[in-house]
Length: 94
Image 1 (cartoon, rainbow, N blue to C red):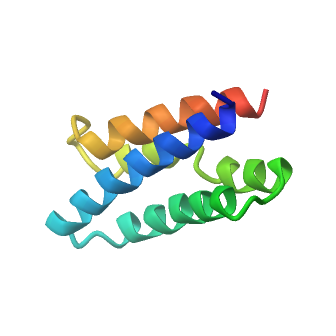
Image 2 (image 1 turned 60 degrees about the vertical axis):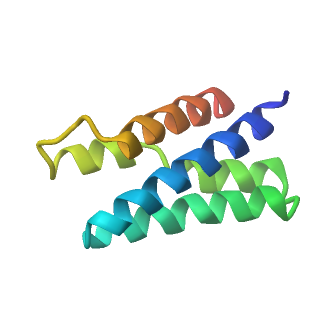
Image 3 (image 1 turned 180 degrees about the vertical axis):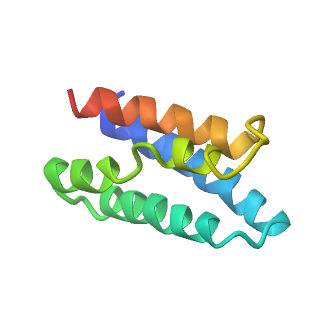
């Protein structure tokens, strides 16, 4: 499986986790994260160039850390999934 396919699968899982979080939280930052993740998924599904996907995926880096700076609850599913996504993105960009 290609790295882009791995990224797509993980982005889909992360979007689901973020959507669950949004149901229980009115934090505007969750919507911002969802937009970034959906932009990456849309680019992959539309067959955008690998370079364009990388540019969008790069915007996902450090989102989990940014959220953790505003919250004391680090044991949230969406944060775990965001961390997994960031790991894949880092592999893509190296």
